[in-house]
Amino acid sequence: MSILAKRKTDDNFEEIPVIDFTDASSSNPVRRMALAERIRDACVNVGFFYSNPRLVVKNHGIPEDTIADAVEAGKKFFKLPISSKMDLDIHKAKNFKGYTALLGENTDPTGRGDLHEGFDIGWEERESSRSISQDILSRDDSGMSGTNVWPDLPDFKEPVLSYYHSVVQLGLKLFPILALALDLPENFFEDKTTKPAAIMRLLHYPPQSPSMLDNDGSMIGIGAHTDYECFTILWQDAISALQVKNTQGKWIDAIPIPGTFVLNIGDQLSRWTNDVFKSTIHRAINKSGQERYSMPLFFGVDYDILLKPIPSCVSAEMPAKNKPFAVRSRCRINGACGEPHIVMLHLKSGAIWLYLMCFGPSTPFKAAYKSATTEDGSACFLSRSKNCT
Image 1 (cartoon, one colour):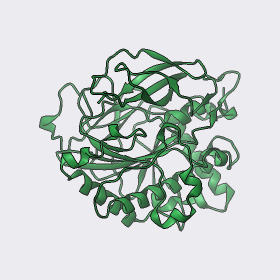
Image 2 (tube, one colour):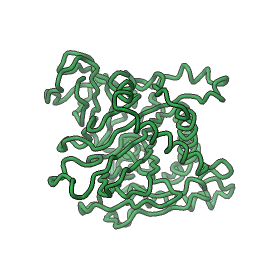
Image 3 (cartoon, helix red, strand yellow):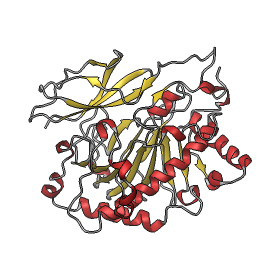
Image 4 (cartoon, one colour):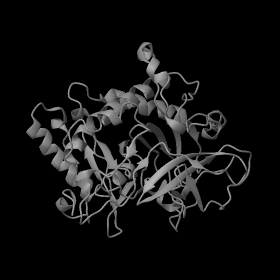
C-alpha cells in the first residue's frame, strides 16, 4: 500500500473540515509540514475543506472589498436584459469564455438542466500590469487560449479581474503545501504552473423556492458532478446550497462560513495521485427562495504537462491505475451536426471523459457520441455536452 493510502482514516465523513491557513507562508518548515498533514487528511478522506483566504497569503491576502466588488459586478451583469447577456453567449466564443444562460448546461447527464446562469473568464492581465505581459500574450492554453469577452458595463472588468488574479495567487500558494502533503519537494509543482489553467465563473442561482423544487430532483442549481482540474477555490454567499456526497451516499451540506473559501480536489489531481486524493461528487440546490451567488475558480497545471502517477501514491500493493497522460491531448472527433467540436478532457478513474461544445449550426446534439480516440490512440468516453447552437 502507498505511503499516503496508509494514512487514510475514515472517508465516511459527516462534516467538512475547516483548516486555518495561517502557516502556509510561515518561515518555519515544521509549521508548514503540520499544515500539510492536515490538508493531506482532508484530501485523502473528504476531498473538500474550508480555508480562510485572508490568512493564506500573509501580507498579500484577499481583502473583503476585493471579494465584495467582484460579487457586486456579477450581480449587475446578471440583472442585464437577457438579450444583452446573450450578445456574449459562450457558444459564440471558441475558447469557452462568456455567458451561459439559465438551463444552458446539464452537468448531470440524468438531469434536465442546471438552474443557474454563469459568466466565464480566463487569464488576462489587468490594465495596470499590461506593460509586462508580452509573454502572457503568447501563452498557449490549448483550446482555452484567446481573449475574454466583456460586457459594456461600468465597474465590471476591473473588479472581476482584480478578484481573479487574487485567487490565482492564492492557488499558487497552495501548491507547495500540497507538495509537502504528497511527500514531495515543496517546489515540485513550480515548473508545472508557469501558465496554469485557471478558469473562473461568476454564477447566479435564481430563487428556487421549496414549493417549486422539482420533485424528481432532475432540475436543480447544478447537478451532481466532480470538477476536472487540480482543485477548485470557491467563494459562496450566505445562501446554503452546496452539498458534498460521502461514501454512504449521504449529502453533506457545505454550510457557508463567513470569511472562508471552500476548496475541493478535482479529477486531474485525483488521477495524478492514483486516486489517493479524493475528487468528491458535489452539487448545488438553492432551496432558500432567494438569489444565490458564487464564484468558483478551477485551477489546473500547464496544459503541456504529462501527468505521471506520483511516486508516494504508488506501491506494489497499490500499483498505478492510469497510464501517463498529457493534459494537452486532444481528440479527433466531429460533431453529429458535422461541425468540429472543442474538447475538454475530464480525467476520471482511468478513463478519459470528454466535455464537448459544438460551434456548428442549430442542430440538436445527438446521442451518437459513444467513444472517440485521443491523439495517442487511447479510448475516450463521453461525459457531458452542450447542445449544438
